[in-house]
Image (cartoon, rainbow, N blue to C red; front, side, top):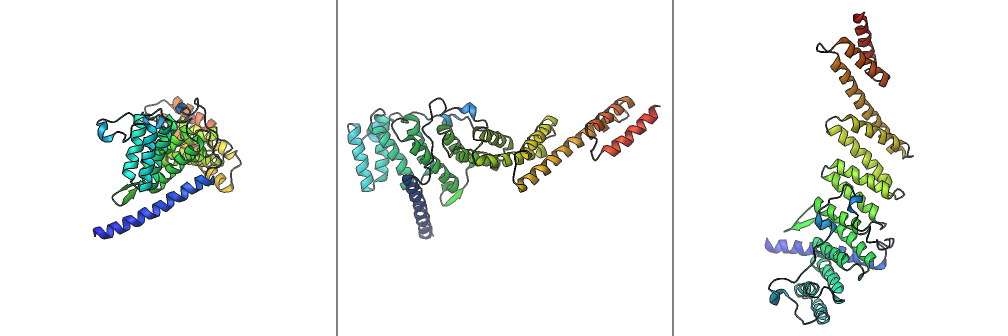
Length: 354
């Protein structure tokens, strides 16, 4: 059985390596993200207040700085200077000594963080995790560290594109425990959030935000998803993803008013939003959904208004309060399905009052 498991594990590793190589080749040729924007300014890269619906976890916004490890005679650099250490790391890679190469790169960055070799070692460390170990989460963290601490010493656009590609690999593959894969929506969502925060002007940012919102939906967090969709439309109104965001936001708004306790303000806001969606020149299928959802929300509003009117039509209330309640209901909803019933009861109460 152990031999059989090893065979399947090796097959999976080979398949994943081909996948990673294809991603890296596309990036190198500029086919995957040739449209990536210029490096964002320092005033916008971490504008977390501008991204409602994103987590505000510290490890998303910033990365802790690496420092020399304890017991440096074991985990420290093998050479006496950064240049020699980098050459040593390269030699380990050439020999296929991946563990030694990984430790050599990490030790260089920790021991000589200001050396010109440090960003090269940091990028090499991310490459090792991505290309050899296929540990996408670790690769993502190392590339993110490179962008955070060596943004002016690396090809920022290329690294932003690579960071996004690794986030998509995390989404596709999930985490691996023994031989089982499963989706980890929180880690994957935070990875996409980290990409957007570091490259808010990139052309893949709307797509990344769409993924964040959909992952919020996967966890049933409709209100957070609505915030992300709304922000996507505001920040990127001309992006193709804006139309998808409009539809998904409408769907989530309907989920909220269906599944949560009745809130008049929220229902009125949803109706106003659906009117705007109908006025946005949607496709026929989307238009039909917007119209149906609008009518459903209006019916919910009318139903609650009618129940409120009936509340005043009881033995504990005066006839005058019931008459006023029915009059208000008919003035506001004259075409309601409850209008005839309300009108008949109103006439009866008026006659009794005489």
